[in-house]
Image (cartoon, rainbow, N blue to C red):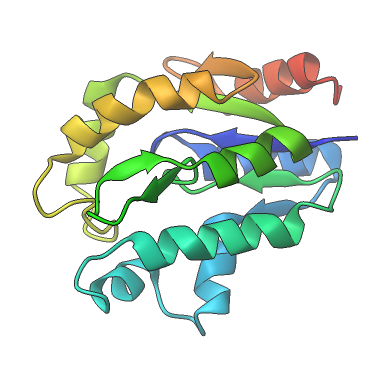
Length: 179
């Protein structure tokens, strides 16, 4: 059976949903962010990005390597970092990552999770553990540019607003064929 990959903006609830899915199915969760921390010797993502003057390109390359490593696996729940669909071009501009989206589509049933933008902006701006995605652009600007990409590169979209974790997981299991 194909993996399930949860994608969406940071703070949407991918980790919480993936953990509940794991409890319901007995399938393991793989967090791309946690693997990245492990592979960097325990360096947090904010510190990893900060060590390269705020350049996200090395981290995006690491995400690609992680996806390549797990691409042969089946029956996993992938808890993908919010930037999993993206890379940076040589000028530092964020672009859709053809290499990462290709792996996700080939190996997983991709589910885009969403919430109201206002909720996400408030949550992220008040969380000091999340590194800035840009020294120039606001999180809201980046979020608005990313939202259409999450929808475009998923098999289904699920809004989490005003829904319990259990309701969302039931819908994921039903619509993914994992039920």
